[in-house]
Length: 274
Length: 262
Image (cartoon, rainbow over all chains, first blue to last red; front, side, top):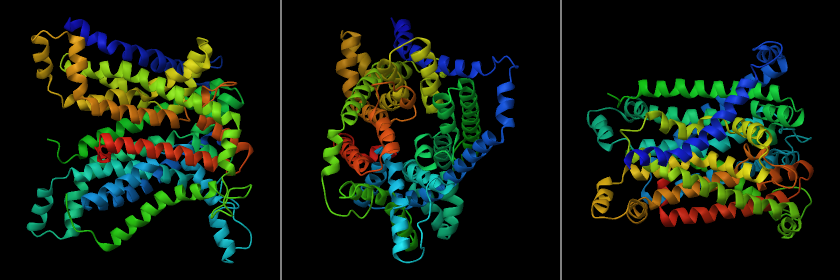
């Protein structure tokens, strides 16, 4: 009975993941090596195309900048939230969760209204007489980054609030009662204890922004293509499925490499680990 | 953790929250503007754009499809995910470690790659129609919530209670339904909500799995935006935000929102 139960209960989910996810993704990657011009010809074509390499470096750059800004902004907010009294804390968490539960399309769309030709920023600047003609802020790298930071800051706040709240009060009291100044306590006690959480947040935001589709589609357009929008364009607009699969394979490899490296780092840098 | 907060930090945090909430307020404002283009602050006040949503058939049909896919996909993921989570916790020592990793793969694989691969292998390769493909794709996408969130509840469950019921003669399935399930209720609700929200907002997987006549609401919104840049999209967004408010009210009533920071 037990033998049947332990395997039988996991069987449907196991089959679903293998049949619907693992095999299709492996097939997608496998097809890129099955080319008449040689197994790596499609990768050579990708990395020889300045246009496509540009998209890859842009995607990495945007993901890195988004992650860095989200880390700083998210940590600041989480640090303050963790000290708030109960009632205020609930309100702050509601304010962070609400955007998180609102869809990507809606949240990206908000920035079209803000940054557009007739948008708020342009209206304000022309109204104040600072500029004569409306600026074109959409379809720039900056507009994509702003929207992505907006997308991922709530996730960072929630991840880090949990981590900061988990730091035992005794440790901080011990530090200050032994004469450490607040800045020293922060730098030498709180920050090191938060490092594993910061790494988890960084992985979530980096992989999320690296593989995003809707935000670069809406705010970057054709001009600021990223890997996600390139994959879609190859697959559904030009029907170059091998090209799309190549993009997919590169995305998978980079995502897995980032997760692997960062989780190893998290383990090594965890001061609480024995 | 408790420490003193410098006023400057407090002000900066205020600015962060302004940054988080102002864009949503702007959408609400723009939805009521009596202009044919999107603008904020709204000029005039009209409900015309809300009426317009219901006048456009594509919004009605895709909203229904989105709900269908979210309910069936989430239901399916719980149906296969809860037993898996149970087995992973109950037979923790005996089951191999890679099994737990397998169930979080849908998070590790980029969504857009998953959507594209599903289209290639299942929809085109096996010729499965669009709607079942969408439901299966969403079920897989949200499976990690079912396994992990329910698993977290099960980790806190004392399995000796279950053994007591079984040794007193209660059949295993009945034991699960009357003893185990009530104890992990919060986890199941949380998994359902997170999965449902993820499914209903999904773009990256759905964008490949929508065909002629069948589309989901977020994909329809993107398509509408490419042709019209009028406040209709803002009013759809307001309706979607109302759904979020409803969901948050449910979370608060059942689990408490602080649950989400854990």
